Image (cartoon, rainbow, N blue to C red; front, side):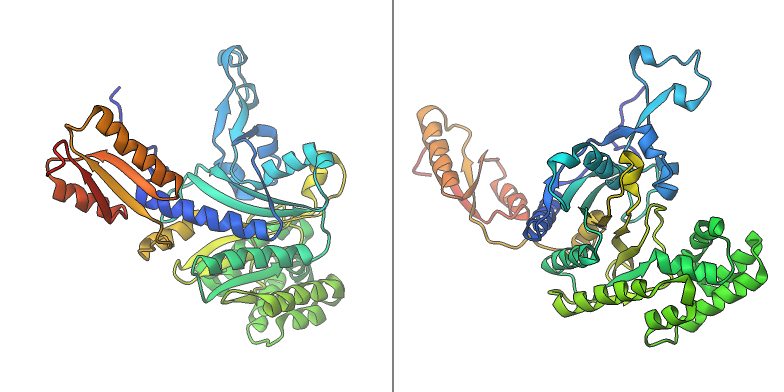
Length: 419
């Protein structure tokens, strides 16, 4: 079998110029989140298959890279089901591993626990612009805080980070699963049908309200329920105070505390934000993960023309591991899409740190070479970035290539110093 130079489909090699931007973005994210009191942790990229297929990950559970059992445990001849040959899988997000991590280590962690996690995740998805099968996720989560201070802190930390990366005029879209469920119940949909209804509603940006209405009817839901539901959504478009309107309209289906909860988050973020963005109540926002129980939010960035991150409250998830209720809320920033936008904008990493190239003629060796390297080591100790390399015959082209890497200062060393 011939060897291939190409990476596996849906994965990519990262060249130095992009790596420089990725490292910069990671540093900004880490430093900003630390300033908000988040502590960095790490979990393995391999998880138990039972955790990954626990109906917590929504559609992503269909995209798991599954790992075969190893050695004597793998017996294909006697295998009858998938469970006979598969025991682990690559993580499709960072939330399931985080909850497992918290469930195991809760006694050694502060309460509430503010976690920062950065790492690659894997989905057997169809690759497209800004979407890969292996990609970096950056999550912040707060476990143990049942109040909406968790949402406020998560939104402010994330938007502060985006502001530091130069993003302006973006939006934080916000909704609450309790409002979504109340709208569906008010319209006459049975609770067991809610998730299926929401999957259709989630297509509204692509197929419009009429398309949502048509698909709901085609799926077999009662026409009266569909009419009530879509009319409610249509009426919301003309409301100056949509949260108050829904609270009054839905009455017994959603409590006053949900209205107060959302309004307090929105008002607090608007009053204290440090970046140029708007927070917008979006009653059609769904989020795909079935584990969300309350507030949900997404980042909409005009330069990308789509969603660049999101999250929400998932209060019931820890209980599945421990049997104990632990409130939890998280926000994932769309690292790969942000890097893509910066690359397309020709973003240059700020900072004019001292950088110099020592070009050494090929004949220089022995004591003279040691002296040059010692000089470079001293400059490195003083904070200067020094690239030591042999001088090419085509020195002009060599310098042009080094210029592209950000090097503008050169010091040349020859075998004959008079050169």
